[in-house]
Amino acid sequence: MNSKPRVRFAPSPTGYIHIGNLRTALYVYLYAKKYNGIFYIRVEDTDQKRIVPDALQKVFESLDWAGLEHDEGVFVDDAGNVTEKGEYGPYIQSRRLEIYQKYAHQLVKEGKAYYCFCTPERLDSLRAIQEQAKLAPAYDKLCLHTISREVAEEKVKNGEKYVIRFDVPETGETEFEDAVRGEMKFSNKNLDDFVLLKSDGYPTYHLAHVVDDHLMKTTVVIRGEEWLPSAPKHILLFQAFGWDPPQYAHLSTILNKNTKKKLSKRDGDVSVEDFRTKGYLPEAVVNFIALLGWNPKTEREIFSLDELAKEFDVAKLNKSGAIFDLEKLDWMNGMYIREKDIKELAELCRPYLEKYKEKFSDDYLRKIVAVERERMKKLSDIAENTEFYFSAPEYDPKILKWKNISDGDLKKSLEKSLEIFSRIDEKNWELEKIKSELMASADPTNRGELLWPLRVALTGKEKSPSPWEVAWVIGRKESLNRIKRSIEIVQS
RNA sequence: GGCCCCAUCGUCUAUCGGUUAGGACAUUAGGUUUUCAUCCUAAAAAGAGGGGUCCGACUCCCCUUGGGGCUACCA
Image 1 (cartoon, rainbow, N blue to C red):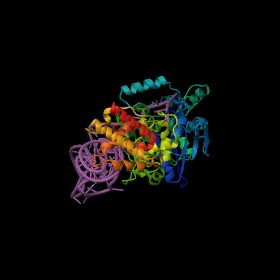
Image 2 (image 1 turned 180 degrees about the vertical axis):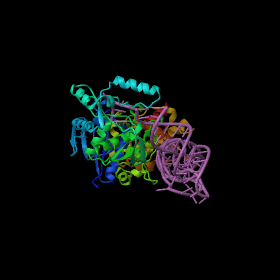
Image 3 (image 1 turned 60 degrees about the vertical axis):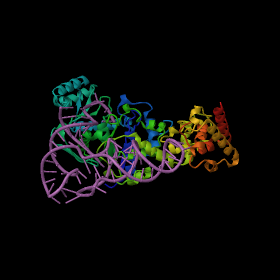
Image 4 (image 1 turned 135 degrees about the vertical axis):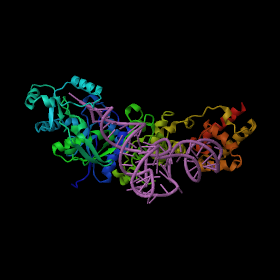
């Protein structure tokens, strides 16, 4: 078997995709790219109760945002239109019901699975009794032992509600090799007679996974660690069907920083969409999450998606869970912001600045971004304390003062700035020119005396970019106006 | 409770028996600087505990402890 590797990401439309899901999808994508395989997407919508209407579209938007393009399976466009591509479809599980039913019934016929008519109430009380007796909750095989196949088939024919359960061997061990954890071995006696087909005719994850990954020719199943305990069930199922199981790679969990528990939607702000709206760049998010639980074993940390794909290796996946820590993401996001092409960055920043003003020119936008980018960690930071680019600042006159200079010296300082700026004419109003004029006039041992009051006059802030940068952005006329105004303030 | 997985600085990690246990983020102290930020330099910071194996364990084995996961007609 040296056919093309085939790997899949299998989201459920039950909510927005979170950062942990995205990491799984990323590794799947990287695996496919690295080994020149097929990355396909299958939609696992077998739990009708949990389906959330717009979830699927959001999942695809997030994947698209991160740049994880897939080759096959389900595609959803921005308008929410769902299409499928590939020769092993349908790729949406709710459209494959007959397939699962056929295989489930086949196992019944072969005596490897059986009909169960137990009510939820009986199951609940059984579980309660077992828990009280401090036993592992497990189905007691009642229907297997007390209802013959003929009787069961009769009941089914009469329309009685049933599920199909897998008859797990009571002895023996089930083994498999996990790509990240090595040799795994489980005692069958600890396994429950799990449900394959639910009473509504839908398959459980277990059945759907085995049937689909066989039929869709998945070569490696990359999924979260939470599936590890049920992996032996899946192996047993593959064996019951007489199929070769795929290779498995169970990924470590991403933990919430505060709770140290598996990242979940409950923790809030972990959806990929949230990161996007807060102004994280996909390059940074992808780079960062790739390094949570995987590492190229070198000291390099900055990688593009393509570079990650080159370096990726399942053998380098970590076994232990990783805490998701925003601080390093912020740093990395800042790195990417500083390296990004200015035009692209400007467009990404535009929406955040619209809270100040609805319209402004591309040129003006780019100037702001060029000046502000070095202090941004997130795109949204462009709109923090930057209102002075759009309107003359209001400020406490006290902050105009540089150290302990007198009001007279302060006024002189501002008048000097006014004079310097007046000398530079409109066509020479360039960053370097403004800077050099200013620096040439400032006392080298006490530049603040000139620069601090000027900067405050222009920005109204104690902390801001340099006066020449701000002056360059807002223009000659506006700069002169703001200085004149500050002089008036000092006088009164 | 049962079953399973995991365990190096605060965080992400390197080390695949012999290292002054390395890097990055964050932190602290300097430098550059009108302020903030950027940038540069430096410092502080780790092998959970106990047994083995071995000439020699962070590294291999066992136990304890701790953390996490699973335990549904959810995925």
